[in-house]
Each structure stands twice: as structure tokens, then as C-alpha cells.
Length: 396
Image 1 (cartoon, rainbow, N blue to C red):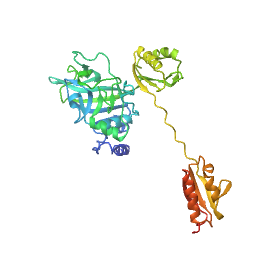
Image 2 (image 1 turned 30 degrees about the vertical axis):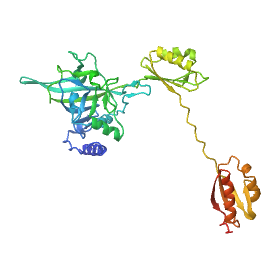
Image 3 (image 1 turned 90 degrees about the horizontal axis):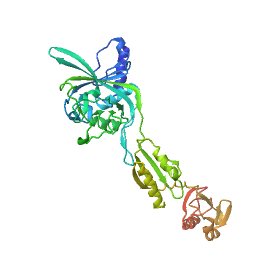
Image 4 (image 1 turned 60 degrees about the horizontal axis):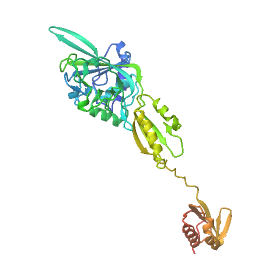
């Protein structure tokens, strides 16, 4: 039982910034507490069975959907099931099974959509149905709760979800605010999302609730999330071609002869249907259009952009030139010593290319002489500072 108490303390501390304190769950048999965690609200994490179980209720039996599962007080009007847990809680629970966050979908620079990617998670719905005086437990794959928009029958093929997850406090806050636990339309705040492009525009929604399978409103539902061990990797959906005057094209940073560019583009994966074409301003217009047509003929959407010159790296300033003002109005620069008069007359040559100078003064040097040397140096456009003195210069 000490082990159970330690688990409770560990996860209460870990979730202090994600959720309010939850009541301590009742004691469980010794065999169960070794791998079952019930600290999170409405969630059971079973590390032995490698599954996360969510407590929920049916909130929609008919209608168009953007989500399969939402959290309370968020998107119940467009989800099948509402759960007690917040997205941040579900994110943390799946992390306890060892899942690493994937990547939400996003729009590329060229305007293509790169779909969500991550670990594949299987979702099962378990609920009780009553027929007359008899009750039975029903367990179905969650995708069977859906049907295509406008269809009479349910989905014919299984639907996958990937663990996008969220990392960072702000991303978790956004996810909790939106309530996006399991999505059917792509949302960057999703915990689990479909691994393909799916619009959230009402007229283009892909799915609706399947009333032949979804139980009546307010029916308690347990959702079981199980990682399959598979992953959906990010898809390459865009290529980049760079044109510099007098050089062969670069296709995704790889040099390709112009004559071979057509074959190289046509050999790219079928998902690559967008290209960013960057051309130097000095590049011949005819050559730019030739490459543009090669990309277009490969059935790609082409975004033409001017290639911006690489930023000039600022040269770090060198050390300042050491100038020592010595007795008898002598000025020493490096290994040469000049009279004040000669230093003034040859300052342009002595200080050529110098940006900064540091002046030191000998013991017997007057402030007036130091000031004259500084005026001469600054007169050549050189920044001059008195950095130290071997001894305080004497007053005039």
C-alpha cells in the first residue's frame, strides 16, 4: 500500500500545473496498484495493459461532426462523446504509456497541407445497452460510431488516429480552451487527430454521427485508447527549386542539370504536389518560366518567389589600435614613435583602415596633450577612448 501512496503523490505533483487536486482514489488490490493509476480526473491509466481509459457521456447522436471526443464545456454540439478529462490530462496520460508527441498538421510556405503525424492510437468505445429488462455490454471500434456525411450506412473502412500531443504550457492551455481531445477535422490543438487533410468548414465536413450505432444521449461511455506500436511519419508534400544565374537548378538543395530536372520532379512522391520556385532577380525570365512550366506540367501548384540574398554576416570588430602618449609630447603607435606634430601631419596614413583606438598616457603627459591626440584620431573618423593611464596625466 505504500507503493500506491507514492504513486498518488508523484502524479499529484506532476499535474499541479495542469489540473486541480483530485480526490485520492480508493485503495485497490495489491496486484492492481502496481500498474493502474487513477489520479487524473475521469482517466484510468493502465501501464500493464498499455491503455488509457476515459469516462464520458454521449452528447450527440445525430449531426455533423468536427470531433469524436471533446472535453466538458467546449464542443459538445459537434462531438459524439464528452469526457471529464481535459486535453492536457489526456496528453499526460498517453505520455505515461511512453508516447512522444507527434506533429499537428500545418500549411507549408507554398500553401500545401502537411497532415498530422505521430504514433497510431486505436480507440474502442464500451457502453451498456438496455433492451426491455435485459442489459448487455457493447464494445465497438470508435470509428463505427461514424458515417460519411449524408450517407445512410456507416464507414466501410477503419479510421486511424495519431497522437499529436501538445508540449509547452501555452500549447496545453490552447488545447484545454478548445476542448479538442479526439478530432475528425484538423485542429492544431488536437491531442489525437486523423492523419490526413480534413476541413472544419461546415459544408466540407467528412463525418457525422451514426445513429444506428451511437447509443442514446447521456449514455455513459468508456473510451479505451491503445497505442498500436505503429507510427504515421510526416509526409513530404512540397519541394523547393532554386535558380541562381549561371548555375544549375537546386532541387531540395541538390544540384540537378536543367535537362534532367523534368525526370527528377516526376520521380518525386505522389504527395508532393506543391513547389516553391525561388529565382534570383538577375536570373533570365525565360529560364525561370522554363522551370516553372516543368513544375506545372508535373501537376504541381507553383509559388514563384524572388530569392533573397543571404544576410551579410557582420564582421566582428578587431582589437582597438593601441596609442600611447609619452613624455615630451611623443606618440607611440605599435613599434613606431612620432612627435605630436608628425603624428598630426601623418595621421591619415598612420590610422588608415583603423576603426577604433585606445589611448594610454604616461606619467608626465599633460591632459592637454592627451586631448590633442584624441582630437587628431577622431578627426580621422576613428573612435578613440582613454582606457587607462600608467599614471595620472599632469595638468597643463
